[in-house]
Amino acid sequence: MNEDRFNMAVRKFLKEVGVTSQREIERVVREGAPKGEGLRLRMTLTSEDEPALQHVVETTIELR
Image: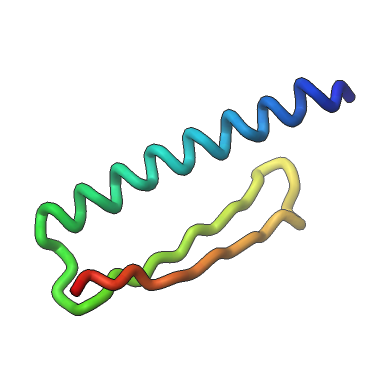
C-alpha cells in the first residue's frame, strides 16, 4: 500500500464529505426546516466492504 496515495485519497473523501455536508446543513437551515433552538445531527460512517467499520458522530448546532 502506498501511504502517500492512501492519505491523499482519505483526505479527498473527507473534504468532499465536509463540503457537501455543510452545504446541506446550511440549505436546511436557510429553508427554515428546523423548528427548535437547535439542529441535532448524526453522521454515520460505514463501508459495504468492511462491516466492522461503524463510526458515529453526533452533535447539536445551536440556532438561536
